[in-house]
Amino acid sequence: MTNDILDLATKVGRALEAKRLVLATAESCTGGGVSQAITEIPGSTGWFDCGFVTYSNNSKTELLEVPAALIAQFGSVSEEVAGKMTEGALSNSTADVAVSTTGIAGPTGAVPGKPVGTVCFGWSRGDTTYTERLVFQGDRQAVREQTVAHALRGLLRMIE
Image (cartoon, rainbow, N blue to C red; front, side):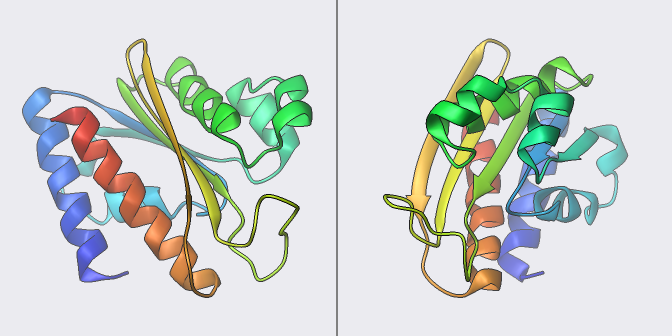
C-alpha cells in the first residue's frame, strides 16, 4: 500500500472522527482495497462499520439491493450501479457515509465503450449521492491503486 493511500486514509479517518460519521464501503474492482486502507489506520473501529466486496452481479443485487434490471441495462461498470451500491451500503449498515468502486482493472474485461481502466465511483451521505466515471492507465495493480486513492479523495470532499 502506497504512502499516498495511507495518508489519504488517515485524513479520511480524522475527518470522519471530527464529524462523528461512520463509513461503509461497497467494492468490486478494488476487492476490499479501500476497506484495507481504512482499517490500516489505528482507531478505525470508531468510524468504520463494514465493507461489502461484491464482485459478482448477483452479490451486488443480493447484498446491496442493486436492481438486476439496472445492471442489465447499464452494466455493472456504470455510474448508475455505483450510485446504487453506495445507497445499498448505507441501507444495509449503520454507516452515515459510503463509497463504492466498480470497474475493469484488466488485463481483460474490456467491452465496447468501456476500456480496461474504466472505473465508476459512488459516494453517498444521507440522501445525497454523487457518481463519477474515470479511465485510469496502467496495469491491474496501478488501476486498483489509483481507484483506491480516488475513492478516498472523493470521501474527503464529501465529508469536509
